[in-house]
Image 1 (cartoon, helix red, strand yellow):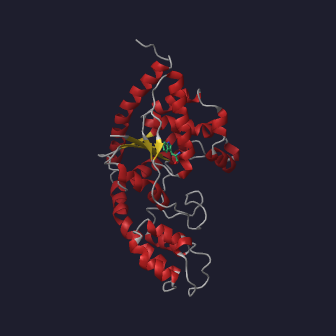
Image 2 (image 1 turned 135 degrees about the vertical axis):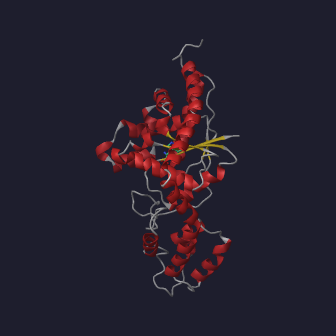
Image 3 (image 1 turned 90 degrees about the horizontal axis):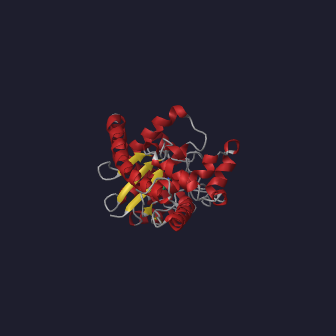
Length: 327
Ligand code: TRP
């Protein structure tokens, strides 16, 4: 079986953009690939963070991912810092990665602007740690969204460079892009994100979800209820495609264009479809929160399995770089 690796930051609150754009896709891959999914706590500390919140965020991230279908019996889900080889391999990669390559990463440039007071080495080095995550398991595919393509491309360059310098070791991993449309935030403009506060959280109370949808931006050209709408320009319609097939949305598409339904009517339908889809996930989250020991054990079991692979690859890396004697 080909191997897949992907990572998610332990931000705690996970929104429908994360779910539709990443986690749902990850869950659909677990029976066809050897899937390794990682909660990347060392990446999370490259920007300001609250140490007192770290453990609860890691647990909440694990709980939601398991509830969304990352069944610990059918894939690996573990915490990055539980496998110390990630940072060890990062150091080796640091020594073959030009600073210039890291400085031109768009995520680094964006985050440097957002966090002017805290532009630390870890923020710059973030992609080297990400390359180590992926290559430590010699993963073939990396399911990520567009904003991470550049990091995967750099990972391929690091793999090539290592192989050239020290001998064939790492496969060049490929991006596995999601086939879902890009979900914008409730403002209908920026990508849905926690930091922009334009999101619908997966586990938020129902009345708050409705309130967020009710006030969300739709087709801005549609000023009055009697104006015809354009679903192609409506983020509410795009979000709806995440919860219902295009075919099932045909009637809404038509009614919107003919002004037979208004935006709030459509939001009601989206709300009902979304809550029906999320109901089993939300109830599983509630169960898992009552069963934290099960979640901890699942994370530890995955870490043990991943560590076995990591130790072996790191041993090979040490031998090839001359860091350990070759018998
Ligand atoms: N940088 C990724 C993000 O912010 C998270 C991540 C860390 C990751 N390590 C990874 C994704 C390895 C894919 C593979 O979304």
